[in-house]
Figure 1 (cartoon, rainbow, N blue to C red):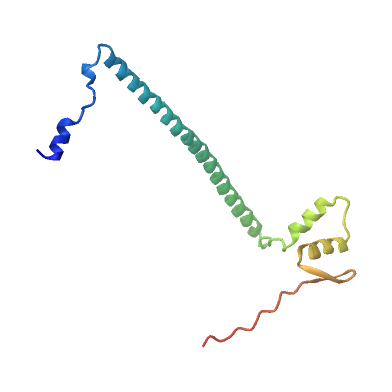
Figure 2 (figure 1 turned 90 degrees about the vertical axis):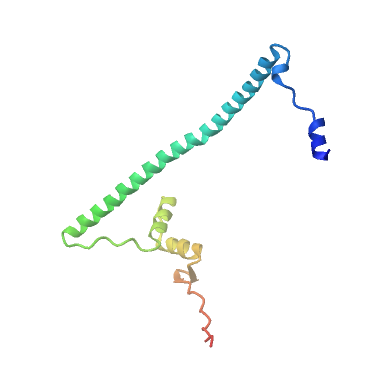
Length: 150
């Protein structure tokens, strides 16, 4: 007899639920079913949380997309109205414009031109004050000459 056959014959089989003490089979099945149902409830809860978040995020995304579409339409209408009488559409404000407005908002008492220049130029590193009251833009460092790769 082969080793495989011998192992099959001597192996103990799992207990048969049908041969259990009367009532034990039903109790054993009920315990197993209770565990399965508890696990199902847990997995359903795990599924429901992200589904709720997905629903909420989908609503937020749709609202943001709708707002963006409205803003794009508004922009097109304003440009159309501005150019309808032959005038050119407004140009965007120059660089630094928003920084100057923010500077005045932070200093509600008002600023002199010197204070504005000093704050914007020297505070941001875009300029220098070589002499009192004289402001100059910082010139970028010269680029090294390009060498011919051939």
